[in-house]
Length: 239
Image (cartoon, rainbow, N blue to C red):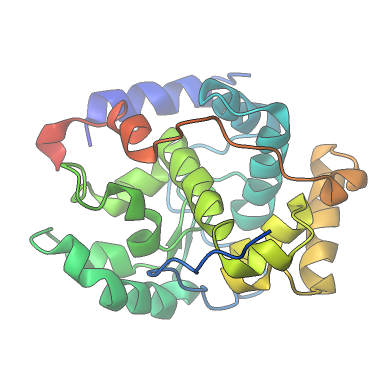
């Protein structure tokens, strides 16, 4: 990753910038249930709701997506940009083993197996799926998921893939259902009071009405292309 670009992004945020069913895509996996409490900070600034919503707006997402991403970041990492949950290392290794063929030739495979990373606590080998078969496939996964803008792009693409699962077709297609999908894509049509309770807590903490949970998920921008968006924040030489 271009360290100069990464530094500019981090400095900006630190400064306070404020139905037929479809087959389930391959390559997804549910992380292991996280331990109680927050993941350990791995470095990087701590953002807030306004900064996450601003990133969403810069990516062309509507305000509802900004609220959802802020709620996920609040619950998964407490807005710490490089939080790491080593309790998910087993799930990260499983994701790596399942997807290793797509990263053939990439250096430092252990970097994909640290655990779940970043604002949205994603498993690296799954999170970087939009970069398969592109010149950016071998960007450093830890740096990518610790970059707030890149991790937001990858989080939105993960949500997009969750909504391609057949389970989503049977779900109420609400923000609460999509939040279930963060634990596992197969849970979007499943009653999970535990996940709902945590979401209510985080919404209240960051000032979003609880009623948001039952609102329908709004469409992503037409032509959403995560790889093209990520390319704006890295250089081809890093691949």
